[in-house]
Length: 318
Length: 190
Image 1 (cartoon, chains in turn yellow, brown):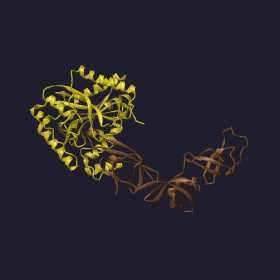
Image 2 (cartoon, each protein chain N blue to C red; image 1 turned 90 degrees about the vertical axis):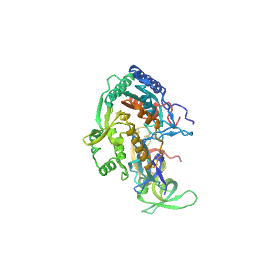
Image 3 (cartoon, rainbow over the protein chains, first blue to last red; image 1 turned 60 degrees about the vertical axis):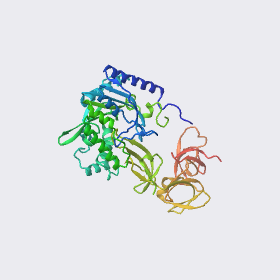
Image 4 (cartoon, helix red, strand yellow; image 1 turned 180 degrees about the horizontal axis):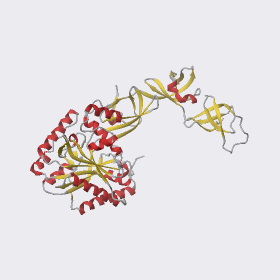
């Protein structure tokens, strides 16, 4: 029989609509402007582990509105958010759907600490709007402390050899050819993450510089760290934020580094987004930004275990 | 040699792990937002029945296992091997050893059909039909008329298996048994 019915039940779809309204109200109250930049773009993402869906005319469906939003910031728009759909090829599972709803916002003159407070306030707002009575508590944990708390070695100083051994043992994997970040990503997702508190918002900060992506960096205790944070709640990764890099030279260097990694992995190498670099050259304001998975936020609030349960139609029925 | 990449993983897929044939039971997609993707896989070893967990990085692959389930008729045991015959008209016979037959030896009845799992052409497991009819070779005498109290007693079947039967069932009767639960279902219809 042809499956035509929604994958979420009607009550959940009503809650979904209420969540969207609550998010828009949250930002309206704070004078953060809603923007809707194109999801179909002439350039794609260079991230090594995120892949665009392509259109037949050579376009890219965006994996996040980050580049166009940063161009708006450089043009002087000020604090803004976008609540819309994004696309990621080859992502499918209980917490992944190739098309999903992302909330991304930027705050001028803020650092990641201020932004983490606002992320907490948003989650609390949504939690209360859904009938939650008590305020949500939050915990801050460095990437290193998160690893060590799970009985794993110091992720910044452990040798690759030992890291591979630990990953092989913990994950039952053949890690002989895995690089440092593969071992760290797998341990983070499969060992650290399941042990984080369910009920509290947990912010993990100070990522290895190899995983800093578009965050600015600093050196502490001889280790270079990224001003990046990830939010975990109800056993799920919900958001990823940065104290944003604004230096166009460093940005170009990271794009080129990504391109080299893509070449070495036999992946397509998209053109660098010259418009973003030109905008940064013209002057992007100091800011912090974050992207939050709205479908997962709804899963967390409603206690759903599969993303299809909060989507009108999942990728299989889209 | 055929291989399957992580993107092809799905439950039911037959693969080779550490030289043993396995079936994928569950495949979970795991990916940190900015990080690499992994497959967390549960596999059942088709020889031992044990379930293994393994993690693969996206893009890694596993060798395919030459595994085939076919219907075969049980013929006889020579004490060391249990002999089965193909039902495809070829009359080809294959011996299954004690590890392949496993607990199914409690349900082996001549001329009955079984699903035999072949790995590289050799039987590695034998599955009985869900229901089978077997004769009771030994049980305490039946209690006449006692069909309502719901009591039970052990009965030994022709294959050596012991199952619980209602008190009114007698030695020499043929009963229907559920091979999955080892439970009595009914008297066999004559």
